[in-house]
Length: 379
Ligand code: GLU
Image (cartoon, rainbow, N blue to C red; front, side, top):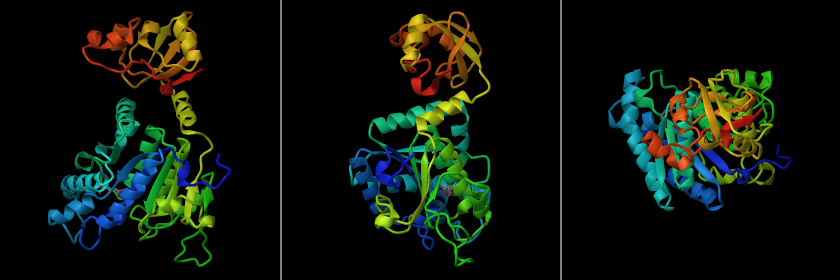
């Protein structure tokens, strides 16, 4: 828990969620380049001080509908999906251009909410985004609207951003919106409404405030933002709702409001992301199989290491990549559990072997670890 007032400067791995209303001019359907350019300046500044930045952006439908002549009426799902298909290209280009001014490479990642929920794809998406960050790129993420099977709703990206935060163990999520935070009541209806600067527990009262549908409060309203806060806090990620319309919206979060920074609402979790991730793994109920390990592996795990194939003497049961499996000692006692990086058949083939042999045994180069230490909890 932070005792000093929370600011953006404390973030190490930062997700910035940008809504359509900020990025796209309502009247023309064009991307607001001046806004995006200053956002890129802000992002470059965060990176220059050592912070990793991931962008979750909306706007594909809003930008694409114009170019397809789909304006001035409510779109059917397939029309929205078509609009997203053309808009997404423009969106990606706009980010690429804006960040290229700072010599920053962007990488487009299109996800569906399901990718973050299904563990198998989750492991891959997590590894890909981690790799992009390690290589210095800024992932620009949106929902894969064109192939989605459910209605595209505004506000989905609030939840998507929180799921991404959970998936990559981000410590800070910024939801840029057209309201500066969560109020005790609807400030347009109730003059006594005040901004809540800090939330540590999502109480029923807070959920009740969010339940009020208030038009104009960001396309997704407060409901999706509180849903995002619930996911982020459970994942050990701080979240802030702040007004994004003004230029330099990120810089404004560098100082607390009392010291001239932006008014905003911070949602502060009680745990760190990795602790929360391990709790999430420990809380899984369905153990798909078991890996029996030797003494060397046991002591490596005890020292906080990953589980390598070399230390595995037997593989039990059937499981898929990304499933939860138990790690057992030779007596069959469970010593740890974790998300396994190989399916049971492949795990059997590499068990007892050195990681450098994985490629020649399986015909593809997978991970060096059977269970990475971030995906493993001792029991
Ligand atoms: N994915 C949608 C888009 O790019 C927007 C979803 C949202 O606004 O939350 O247009």
